[in-house]
Length: 445
Image (cartoon, rainbow, N blue to C red):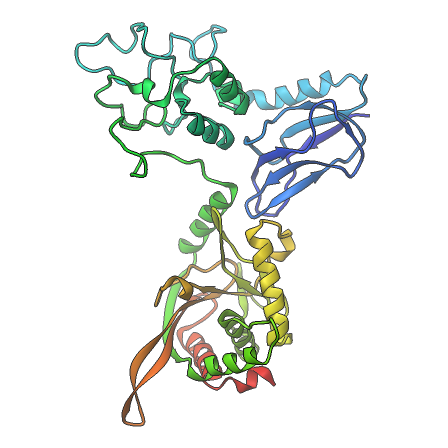
């Protein structure tokens, strides 16, 4: 019996996915449980397991192509089994989404009748007139960008082939890897040839136009397809900064005793180092236990005070940001926190986290001190009620007991959801957080 391979919803927030790689080729045998493909979700790259056995009879979505959740991407069946009804159903399901034809003909997408995307200079033939030195131009997407998979874009750039000269065989005329390979084999014109002799390009028309005088290593006008992670970040930020009434509280913490304690602890550890972020996480967890009204979420008409402290840690990864979650942070010592955080960050950067490892935080921390940022404000990750932004620790002259001293100081800003956390509530939490860092022995007891 045939088994459909679909773009599964691999995380609750996933709306579409990109097919990163097929692990098998058409005709390869498949056993139930085998990994058949790798999918890029909005948070991590995840493997797709075969739900049945047989042969990978058909690949419907090529590598580098993004499709909505639920889309049929492949078919597993017995070698002699008829899969045409499945393919017909898939084609029928996609038919309404197909762009309307420009004319009732069966011409290929790169037919000469298509209006060129490059404006002709004065004195040259009109855009619709044939010209021997102007290559065929692929129609652009509505935003003016040539439709191509990320793999195809990268390959075309490496080979120096203008995307606008390549006919696309993917869905809706999208250029895929095989199209670039075919163009290279056929001796497609280089990227500069598509705009040779043109004085200027029509803004937003056709593909990416780079002036011939532009040298390597300089700024280039280009559009880069957003990754699934970047799309998810855009959606989440729009959901947060608009509906959530943010306000911000900033305080400055004396870090002398905390950093001295860290140095002493690390001196007694063999090959094991506690980081500043680990101390901040432990401190925040203890402060949240004392202020449960901050360890909360807005859920419509309900404010949810959480019974556990699960801390989100903002981690910069290639192409975006992810927040792995340290579970039950208040019940763990500094050493355990350091070990777990190092593992979470390593797997986050390798995009190997499972959904339950980056969802469900009750409070988050973002530390940009290592980037020499002294102070910033962070955007709340709904439905959490607050996030702590940590700046760089600097040596500053301060007045202590009537004398000027040089002390190591750190600025901290908390973003609060005013629907859950009032100003005085947030201020009391920050006061506790500050007092614990300035008297840190309690953290190791």
